[in-house]
Length: 150
Image 1 (cartoon, rainbow, N blue to C red):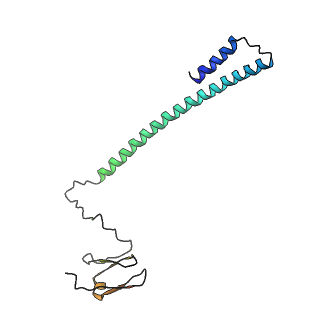
Image 2 (tube, rainbow, N blue to C red):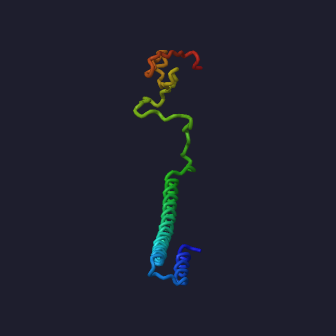
Image 3 (cartoon, rainbow, N blue to C red):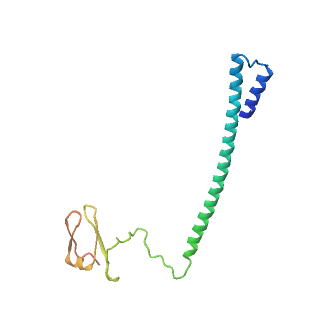
């Protein structure tokens, strides 16, 4: 039984019992049944509104999904991975260089060393020929030689 049906049943029960609404008890029961009728109408209205809002939200979600699919499809069309000129030279383990660090000539080899403090230091062949570098993080001098290069 729904809340509306229960409220209607109580009103019918009150009318069927032929309660005297002139007595204090009769007035009280009539007021309670009347109040239950009003509450039932409010709850029913709220349920209907909630269902309407839920339906609207479902439609909005579907629209957003369609927009997302359209945007993602458009992004995929911007770059053709099947193009013959496309070469994936990027090593996924390789980190991007920090902005502002000038590697100079593209033919220059850049070396990388990790200090005991954990700082990763990039340097070029000129620094390698000097044989050492000072860690900017902890100030320790790191020494290396060219003997192991080949």
